[in-house]
Length: 386
Image 1 (tube, rainbow, N blue to C red):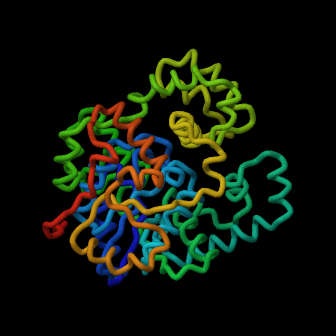
Image 2: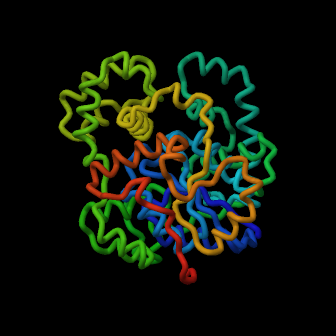
Image 3: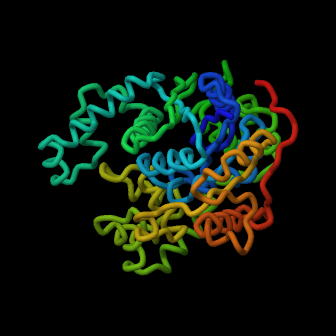
């Protein structure tokens, strides 16, 4: 059985994701589509709008397996996010990896990678690093063709392909040009109804019912009947966590740099909302997303030592179709990691970070679902057409 991997967040699963999944099956000529999905928190350093179990149920209507991307990868920047997803895809014996990009051209992406490699070996790069400039900023200044560095999906595409090339993996990288709304477009696309997840979340939290047209039926039913979350729901707990922590404890947190713990402790006292808090912390050096990732690590007490040399010890299956179940049977003996469909006392040690994140998320949402009482979701009906 041929398989194609999709590294995703599905926050929430929308019409654009349907297009990506269907197109990926076609261009990869695959029998099985495997989604490697962020759990309770996402790459932008935000709590997911719904818990991972509900988002997996949305996705399994159109893919055959939903695998949880480990938390350490899910809340990190593009390099580590891509590394985690790609290596799980390799463990699952995936033939191809399909991802969206603004470019839609693999050769252009590979050429950008070569330019970046040349730049990092340049003396100017080393000098600018010593000046305190960030890697992305230096690359943007020194790479000649910067078009590929402007799109969020292009940047992730570069990381995916780079990890495949550097590790000489057998996965075939494929890209599909992003359609209609871009990743961060704030407004719904009311013509094609292929809208960004950002615009859908904005409409949902603003009580605008027209977001329903940008979602498949199952996604809309699940989202409309659930309590969606954002950072403001978590802010009181974040504030308490920071106030009770010492400077030394904050200094150990993943992504904490340059004495930022002092400013965080100072500014949290005066902040009455998550938005105002991030505005206090944001600067030329620290982007909004970078700060959100750091605050997620604080909330979850993820330390630098937890991330250094991190390697997953098992693969968690959140949902599967009958075809996905059959695929797992064919690759089970080849996979270097145990494949876990139901978490129990024996397997819990594999997923300590993920369980902690789920418990915190459910504490705020009021949901009763946990990693222990939610068995793998099995979809038996045929996949709907888009």
